Length: 481
Image (cartoon, rainbow, N blue to C red; front, side, top):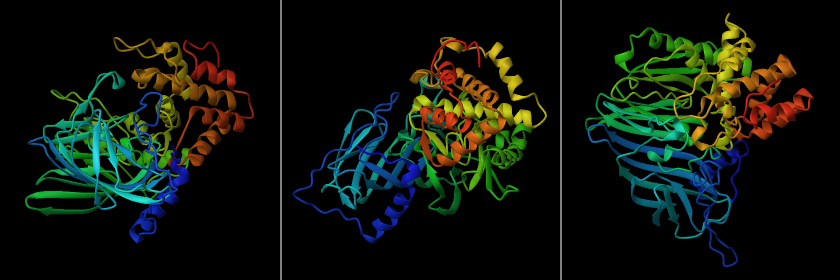
C-alpha cells in the first residue's frame, strides 16, 4: 500500500488528469504482472477503516441534487485517480447511501458493500501502477446525520435544516454525502455542482464559476483550485444573502448569510472581520494559502436544531447563528493550520486546534489586548470547566487524546498553552520562524507532531525533548515550562 503525501503528488495528480484525457495511461494486461487489492483502510489509530490504499485521487467532480422537501440526495461522483500499486480492486468510503451503478474508465463494473461505509469496486481489468483511471458512482438516498462522543454528542456531517442542509464533515463524515477516499492524506481538487429547488442557493468551496436555471431548479457550479481534504468540502443549501468583495491584498471574498440572522450586529461585522483576519494573519504566517476566503452563516443554533458546530470548511468557514470576532480569527487561522497543513494522523489534531486557539490570544495581543503569555498563564491557573462526563482538563494527553476526546477542550487550550510557552522558551523570533517554516514546508500537505518537534529543535538549536514530553505526551498539570 502506498499513499503519496499531497505536497509531493500535486504535479502528478494534475498531470494525470490531462494524461487521462489523452489516453496515455490506459492499462494493459500482462501475464507477468501481479494485481492485488488496495487496502480497505489506512490504519489511522482513531479511524483505522477510514481512507483506502492503492490509489491517489487528483480530482473530484461532485454532481448532486437535493430536495429539502424529501431530504433526498441524488448524486453522481466522478473521480480521477492514479494507481499507486497494481490494483485488482479498490475501495471508496460511502456511508449507507444506495449505489445504483459504478463505472471505471467508462465501463460498468461490479461492486459490493462491506459494512456501513465500504464500497468495494472490481474493475474489468487490473489497473497498472502509475496509470490514471476514472471512477463514476451513481447513488441516492437520505444522507444520515452523525453524532456521538467524538464531537461531544453534537450532530455533524450532513445536517438537515428546515430550508436545506448544512455540511460540516470533520472528522469522518464526508462519506455521508459523496463517495471518496475519506482521509486528509489524500487531498484533491474539487468541482461541486449542486441542483436545488428554485429560490434556494448552494454555497460551496472556492469560486462560483457558473449558475443556471432549468426545469424550475437552480444549479450552482463551484470549483476549488487548491488541494482540499474531503472533510473540508461543503455545499450548504438554503436561503442566503450573498456578497462579494476583494481583500486589500487581493484575495477574492464571498460571504453568504441566512437572511433571518443578517441584521444581527455580529453577523454584519463578520465580512469585515474575515477580510482583516485573512490579510493580517498572512503578515504573520506567510501568504494566504488559497485564492478565496469568506463565510457561510447559518441560522441553525436555535431550537429545535440547536447546532453549535462551526467548521473551517476550506476558503469559507461555516458558522451557526452569530459569529464573534475571535471565532472568525480562529476559523480563518485554520486555513493555514488544518486546511493547508493537515494532520497526517487524527491524534495530532492539536496541531490544528492548538494553533487556532493560540492565534486567538496572539490576535488579541496584537490588537491592544492582554499579551498571549498573560492569557495563557491565567488559563494555566484556571483552565476552562469540562462538560459532564468528560475527563478532567489535565488528564488528557494533548498529542494523543483518544478518539472520543479528540475535540476535548484540553486539546485546544493546553495545545495553545504549549505553543505559547514554547514561544517564551525559544524566543519570539525563532517561534515565528518555526511557525512560518512549518507552514511553508508542509503547504497543501500533511504533517505529524514528531515532525513539528524535530523542526522546533532544529530552528531553536535547543533540546526540547523534556518540554514536549511534559506538554504534549504526558497527562497531568506541568509544573514548569
